[in-house]
Image (cartoon, rainbow, N blue to C red; front, top):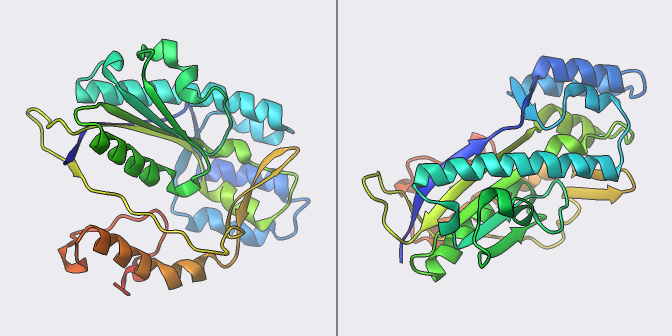
Length: 286
């Protein structure tokens, strides 16, 4: 049974941080106490990022923070982005919030219990019998994995309206206390944002039809230390192992072939690949 995309949206927090501004502030924070900063600061120029968005203003990063104020900022910023992204996706789909049968919420950069879709329940106007599917800990794969889960749920319930909302506030995990290379790289790369999508087996009316195929996931043993969070008294601390480029180079082509095989597709049938991080040459093994 095919699943169709009915609406799609993005939403951003209010604070705009240019890359030059972030580089300058990072220099003030790290420069005097982290000798390797000047060498690592080249990452700001090579990251290909002109600006990013944040739920907190740039002066926030010069202050000390712990679990409590980080998570307060997460809940406030994430709720605002949930409302903006979800409402726009519903508008694009021509749906009302009370029509939504299932909401899938993805986030790995803060903790809310009850989860975010419950936090915005009244503001959104969801039905009391809505199915809630919160997903935590998927990291960089959260968006595409969440879309796969939402597609599977829509396919399993013919005619059900499924809303996916993905929200990340990476800026709140900024750590000036750890003085690790991973923290400098994260500062050069990540920002905050959200996206939402409306899915259903019902065909779209008067629109170009976008059909979503079955998702594909793969896990590797003995890779828990490559990427993720360290959790301590101050909050989340990013984990980036130096083996990541080599691992992706060695494993990316085979994983992609597995995804193609699962969908009965061949490499020469694909017009364009879109990937979160791999370099173009990683596709050459296909």
